[in-house]
Length: 634
Image 1 (cartoon, rainbow, N blue to C red):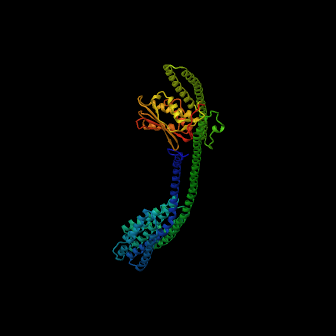
Image 2 (image 1 turned 60 degrees about the vertical axis):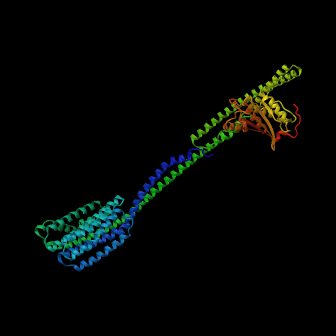
Image 3 (image 1 turned 45 degrees about the vertical axis):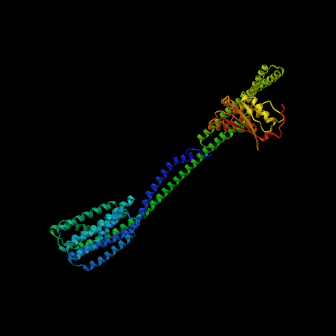
């Protein structure tokens, strides 16, 4: 049985379960997406290294070489052919970088900004070369112009090394700092070339050189403090090597005594010292970069494996939670639906059938009629409800049986009293009949006729009690009785019989077995017509043959009834309810309904053309005899 109104409990339980389940799924998706995104970003660093980092590093190397040769050309006027060859190599590396950079997709906004800035600086390379070729620019200005291009590439590296793994980020950031320190070394070599060409250290060169040395040493020391043992080893060996120590001495001389005392005798070896150190630093830097790139993929794979395992376990937990929740929901809904169906069957079938049976049979209920509800359940609350319904059923059955027995007892009291009155009234009618035959005085005879009529009415009321108790009156006829006699007998049982006019009916007769009931039915309708119409009006009783039997109409000239009340009375006549002792206002309609239902007679109330009511009685042909004959009392 589906629910008739309101939201079903299945939907409410589903909504209740959806809140924690959706929260769990959301948390799992957030964690999986966050960690998985970090792993995918790590894997994308390989593409960044291939398309951006490695080619831009090659561009920096060629720019560093070109910067040194450009300064040498400006300071000495020599090396133009070598510079031209280096410029060609630089252009090829720039073209390769830009071609590969176009292949990189899905760049972060910060990366896009830094890449655009780097391309903008590379576009200024032609102007720098033009100034160098025109000998119209100071060497330090050339160095600064190249520095801006290289610095733009390092800013791009800073955006590139924002990896989610903190350990890997520190190592990558340290390698980037070593790359900046390497570029500072390249700038120092360019300044050394200018100093050697002039044979002295100008204040401007000394200031710039001092800043470069301080920056390089700071970057170098900070980077070494962050590198792990696998990447720091070559740089520690470099720090202890004679090549590095000799270059440190050259740096100190240029920053100190060379500015006041001039260049020392060993200054001629500075370019060679710088070249030797440059070769070692360039080699170590390449190894460090390769080491960092090699660490990216295993770290990303490890992170993805962790998220795969954790995400898989989380997904299994989410799915298991959903399945268990839906299973418990389905089981609870099934239990409640079973309880609902069992309770509905109890209320609408079993108890209704028991009450209907108790109307005619007040024997104790059989076990099948009071069987307890059987609902398969594992929920204690539902089991308690089932037990409560069984207790309610027991109480309801006891109450119904007690009520039926009480009603049956009252009915038997009615029948016994009515039978006694009927017997006494029958004897009284016989006595009155004898007295009527014995007297010839008109006044006495009139009084006897009134007593006879009064007794007849009393007998009808006694029979009404018997009929309401589902019993049959004692009177009956063996032979058919003409309908005219039946209607006259009915009118004779009405107090104001003088107001009733029975029009000539068709020549038909009723079966003797139904004469008493039909006469009683017609008497009740005729009496209602006289009671609910003005005293000065008459009541007409007319009869008409129909293809299905006989139609008798009782028409009064009263005030009539509203349509709603008329419909209610017709419904009660067509489906007579069980007689309620508390509803005695329309006792005659209960009697009419019982008699009509007993013999298949259809009684309908309708408005009369005269303003009152017309009671139409349809007697089926099964109640009519073939030919009217004289009736004989049984």
